[in-house]
Length: 96
Image (cartoon, rainbow, N blue to C red; front, side, top):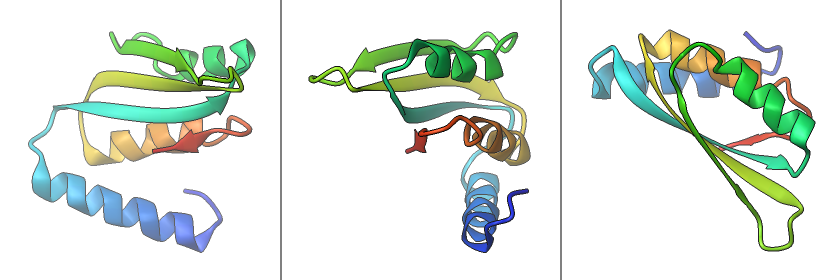
């Protein structure tokens, strides 16, 4: 996992909540805010390649940020967290 103890705690708690509140595999909705940069958006989309994900984007009113929503069937809470960790490597991304 990451080296930030707060992030580790957050993801451990998220995994636990997902395990308790959902049956797996399950449809999961990811939401990210990223600076309006086509390369960064493409990087996020590539992380979900070959997963038959439904991806939608929406620009902010000033055009400085883009929200990226991704609906995808995930196999386990661990897989959900793994994708969050992969996306967190994209500079400037905010996970919601």
